[in-house]
Image (cartoon, rainbow, N blue to C red; front, side, top):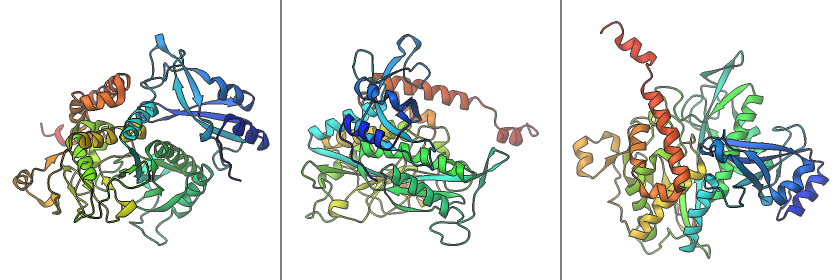
Amino acid sequence: MKYEFKSKEDVLEVAKKEKIVFVRLQFADILGMPKNIVIPVSRLEEALEEGIPFDASSIAGYATIEESDMIAKPDPQSFVILPETIEQKRTGKLNCDIYEPNNRRFMGDTKYALERIMKKAKNKGFVYNVGPECEFFLFKKEDDHLTTIPHDSAGYFDLSHRDLAEGVRADISLALEAFGITTYTSHHEVSNGQHEINFHHSDAITTADRVITLKYVTKVIAAKHGLYATFMPKPIYGINGSGMHTHQSLMTLDGKNAFYDPNDKNQLSDTARYFIGGLLKHIKEICAILNPTVNSYKRLVPGFEAPTYISWAYRNRSALIRIPSRRGKGTRCELRNPDPSGNPYLQFAVMLAAGLKGIEEKTMPPDPVEKNIYSLTPKEREKLGIDDLPANLGHALSYMSESNLVQETLGDHIYNNFLHVKQKEWEEYRTQITKWEIEKYLSVL
């Protein structure tokens, strides 16, 4: 049975009726990893009225030992009952906002960063909608050890005996339905063992919640099938990696698509062009948020359907930003470099911030490029004004560290902590001696 929750009374009534035993209070750390506090249902009313205190000192990017006390306050409208495929005991889940003991919203709460920029968009008359395409791999386990052996050898959209994960994707979709998330497509992707599940677009906050849930559900269901699901962008050398192409649009407060102009030759409004101009102008400085791991940049190389150059187009899939053919309410732009290893609250926040800045400054993008950019020479790209995306995480962090836009959007707490965590990660990787180096140089130098 489907319920609608508007107040704490609704939650308490349904929890009693459905004989809920435990409740998971969920939030995300700065890297986008889901965290949760499990309470017995006897504390549910207390949680809804006052929140539940917790020690945040060991949560990535949250707080130091000296300022570790935080309070998780659940949103009653987010209440769902977990399906038995996820949790056999009768368990509910609530998404939480994080507060300091003085009852101020915690500036390290990444959802709050997205809420602030969404409020700014609303003040300008816009609602920001996103629809991400979340890709992932299913790998085999050997004696409970993880491998990078693909579960199957099927290809893009295959309908054959080689697609062994049709049942896995179906179980994921059914579990998501129990969370109130309706999937509209699921299919095999290009690489062996690679898959994609999509749900309907919505406002960015709702969608970020759904991305976190999708990742969690996918991993749990995969494990029940004896497999391992990973959203790592490039787990295998020489094949396509997993991205999170993000479709974006701005709706006016009366429900019209602000990107659509029926009188324009391409039916694209100036608002849309300015938004695209902002994304292109600021893409380097937001790249560390959109592609936040060392591995992210192993995906962003020519030849594997991932963007490496800063350009836009109507049809060209080698461009960073593409305009899908649908118009009217479906008019949107698709940003193709984000990947699913990041924190969706932060990813959507910086995308929106860049787009709004483009609208504020009326940043008109260069002409669209419909040629295969991968086949162009460096001189041809230079002539067309096509620049490169950052080549690695260190490169991306150097741009972010000088970005007023990212600092203003995320706030000092998230901005400084993210840079600290990721610069440490980059230095750790940069100083590693890899197997490739040993095999390449040890015997010849």
